[in-house]
Length: 102
Image (cartoon, rainbow, N blue to C red):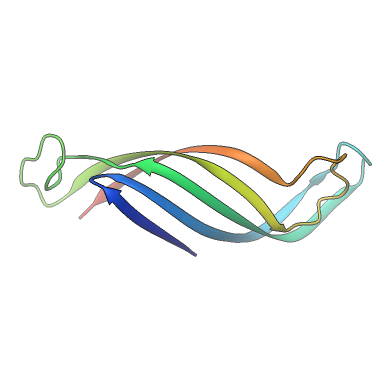
């Protein structure tokens, strides 16, 4: 679940809460963990539209293509993946979203 707010043309900020399942072997205690987890993502990015109204190469077609690079921070709200060796559950993130608009 998330919210994206455009602040200028394609520039935006977004906040989302992701729920899922985390599993794997912890490097510190060597134990295997399998647990539900909830993460908070805060991102900033820019949407570049191609072949869509108002985008680059606007040709009036009904289907467009977009590329959205984003950078942000992920914070673990509810995770239990074992000991972290004093490190926080906060990570830098980057993503590249590709999609179609119609």
